[in-house]
Length: 559
Image: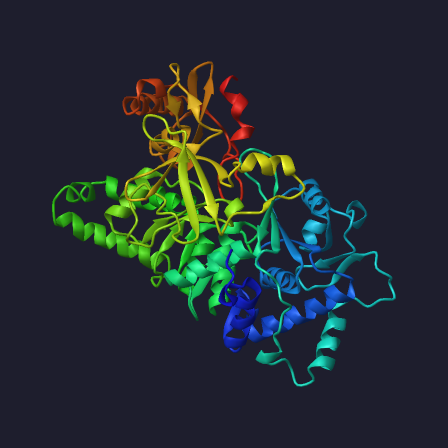
């Protein structure tokens, strides 16, 4: 447990607000809405008054649901610095799922996007007393006595009475809160189809901030573009908490992060660090880089020593410029990165690293600073903060990854059975992931324990590795490898853009997939052979961190 006052989660932000009072803290990108650290602290003070006015007590739960924006961040920080527990709800959850989370968590207050709330009702919420709009903090619904003013305007009047000349840095004083206390309950949206409330202590979040400070990933006036959902641990930890703890400036993308939108934001903001999921880089590689390097004369030049470096340097600079040109590195997480894409980025010395984590670890477990990583790995386990070991390894050394340390959750909320199953008797967290740790300490992920398949003679088959190879073949956008009666079947969502460009008919596409299957099997072991490729008409449904929800497709191998 982190016990130093310097590492206390709430005090970290108290110090940051005071030290960076005049600096810009957060911006809704594409708008004129920007808050300095002083203005953000003032808004937090007003929310604290509203919490108290509405009867919110220490350790009560407050839920927030909506796209990334300045008000979302204000609610989060106001909740944790008040001593309450924040319950971030992914905006992509359906209304019935969100209602279940609100009720299961026992949330007493809800901040939500107006449009999302239209599919809900206060009467369906067991303990919520008041619902506020995430757009402007207006009251959307309440069962509090109508004569009691609980408006944002009331909080503004209270602020003016308390600080007639405005708040000053020394006025930021938060109640003492131990790192052992609960900061948040994050409900997972993993690939198993079962959502559980991950109880995250302040200590886990403080550990991340300490790590970011130590590595120099964040610093005063650093710039981040937050396009990953803040309700997910990955984006929340780095783009939001880490950046603001250091005095940086975060720009929030409050719309669907289409490539065109992101590239425009990168060009304007020129971020100093970028978080991404593999899909972004994979799309850029497949749609822009791969066609460029496959055509003569570029393909010929790349085979000539020294000349190839000229072309590769040009491609590297184009990529760097596309992401704003001033970032130290891009950190990839949330899902495996395609090997062909990673190999090419390594070849051109593109500043990119891959990390590994999970919601239950808030989320970071391993990562290595660029350029110190190793190809194919997720870096090294965070020194001084986390430990990892491999249990029950097979002949290749692949076994389940167990972890423990500062970032680990307390357990699953109101789910003792799942909590007991998640931990070993001696306190190690079962990640459910399979991997190896090499002699230098680098961690390599092989797949999920639940997705691993058994070959005809008991061989371990990792479908993610097969899919990575298949996704690099012509006309394949993405794939899922499934098993039926000891046979492997691949579902493929075609790359319809390439199909249309080459005027392929349905029969042509089916023939191309059969050719892909034969080419794929030539580079697979005998027990990994794919017997059939089946076309799937739509993109596979994903979690917010862009992992495929495999459980939705397991029966399709037999169809």
